[in-house]
Image (cartoon, rainbow, N blue to C red; front, side, top):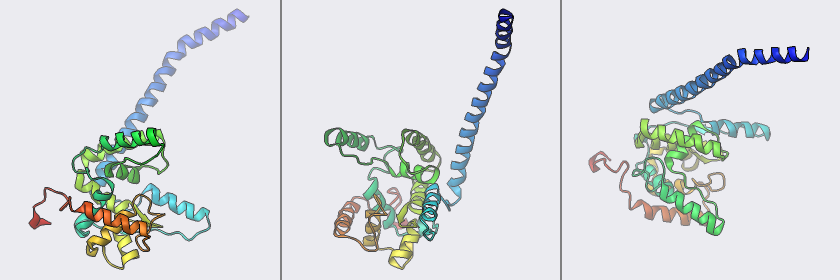
Length: 252
């Protein structure tokens, strides 16, 4: 009986295993098709449609509810041309001076960050504005190798499909700029009682100074460190006359 059962099992595996294997491969193939199809479609849609909500906004709201706090979410989408011309210049001066020259990744800064980590044990980010935008719009904030890999994929997509102006527009509309404040229009209203289009050069530099940690640093009540960083950004802004740099002065 044992041999018969063993023989039956062997025949069962020989008969069904190939079809099971093929079924699994088809499922994996369909998942891959779905991932690439849905992500590319999302990127194409957001090339034209305003990004009204991001995963980070949802996460922050959930955290506020869990902490029995009032939900705080200020966000007002405005086109790039309705922002102060100093705002994108301040952002790239603060966060990514090579933004217009790279294809989504600043390998010089990545090498510097790795070297500092090895020599001093100091961890610092080397993410470009493109990478930050990909993370803000499509992914979650917690760092991991999985998220970094998917972030790189989305970075390539938005660089190819959106272009620099759209990336900057989405970045300045979606990035966290204070407690429950997202985007330049919201921070202009909440911290400076004005519109994004009316922000001065100094105010834009101060907003940009908060971007490494907008929950720690405030553009409304800046510390001495913030004032110092604002001055540094203003000096860096002298190197960037306009954004995008190829736009003639009369169209500024």
